[in-house]
Length: 317
Ligand SMILES: C[S@@+](CC[C@H](N)C(=O)[O-])C[C@H]1O[C@@H](n2cnc3c(N)ncnc32)[C@H](O)[C@@H]1O
Image (spheres, rainbow, N blue to C red):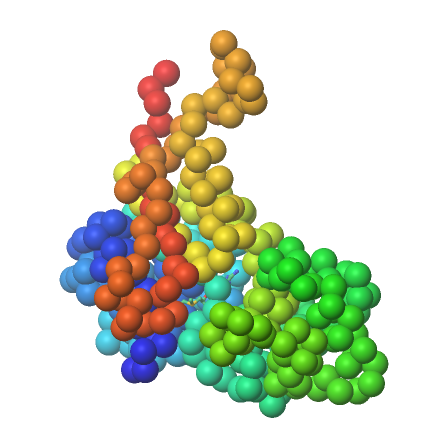
């Protein structure tokens, strides 16, 4: 295994999800099976794991990596926004532990045909599920310069979104944008890196992130996925979410904060009329981040932030 395939924050995931024999676990982003393998070891001899991934190739990879666990593993190609139904159909309800390790896997990044990487000669596709939705190249084709700038600003927090969008639209019209590598080049030419940025991160990093988030509707599918996880957990069950950019971490933070409150009216009234009751309690008071040792072993972990919460027992009337 190369360094890119090391599961991120794995010791912290194991300690905080607290799985053991008999646990019913959902790994909603099973990818290459890195976290899943450790969760299955920690829940031996009879814990069961439902591995979900939108990507058919990831499911095949996980099947290979987890074959030794036999019937303890069930794999499903699905969007994690359907977690509750998928877990129900597979006989996994209620769950003791749910893990989301969001975003892109190193297998996807390394596959030149998927167009996730700056060097890929293939068209920028960037879909996790290649059978649904539109590719990044189609998104570029269908978007106006203004819409494209909006995507880059909203999902990539790209300060130079307008200049980059203009260059992309021009390159496309001139037939100069066929591959992911072309896209990276067009962005680099439009916004040459200066000063401290030069050589540190690729100029196209934020553009690629923004297009990937847009084509996979990553911020739209997260709220229903978190609600599904909450509904699927048994009281005392635990939820862990690892995010790699601020947009998704903000959604997770707000979800846990809201579900940790008894009344969600704003401003708080003297007497609650909304009837909302706290269903979660945050563990570790917020965020868990990788140690310096992990970051030096695995650079991909450097932007990781994990939030963990436990589901509360319903309050007795
Ligand atoms: C960071 S990787 C997971 C790596 C995995 N934890 C491991 O240790 O090997 C994220 C995975 O989540 C999948 N994914 C992203 N969004 C998804 C969604 N909405 N539904 C299902 N899978 C998704 C991606 O296809 C990718 O394989």
